[in-house]
Image (cartoon, rainbow, N blue to C red; front, side, top):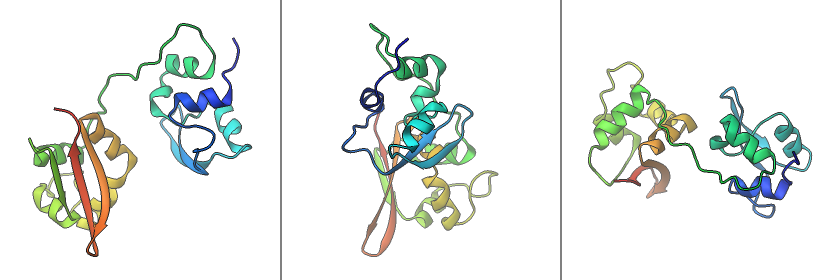
Length: 164
């Protein structure tokens, strides 16, 4: 089989040569992730070791279809939900039927049962945990996007429902 050209390989993962950031999140087959360079030296090196820029391509069939040119194959993202941590379950319960919510990490902490194991007890740690890629991915698999912004000197967390 013929290896897929770099530009096509990037395009399938949502990137192109001109807008490729200097550093990006890389995903490995063993579940490891890291922020790595995407320069002309590093990208082929990581690609050769089986790393990808989009998690959906970690599944072996998807990876083969990404790495090698195969006529007639369309790539569909897998349909699965990430098993939620206790923190994700608490956020889902607190979010309820809302379409969006915005507030500080202190506000979010008051909505959660922080006595439960796996749920951060302080707003600072909660803010750190909610930003972790695993937490964001798990919430996204349930149709909730996490965003952070500053307004009037406050650090705000925004939760938005993307699906019904």
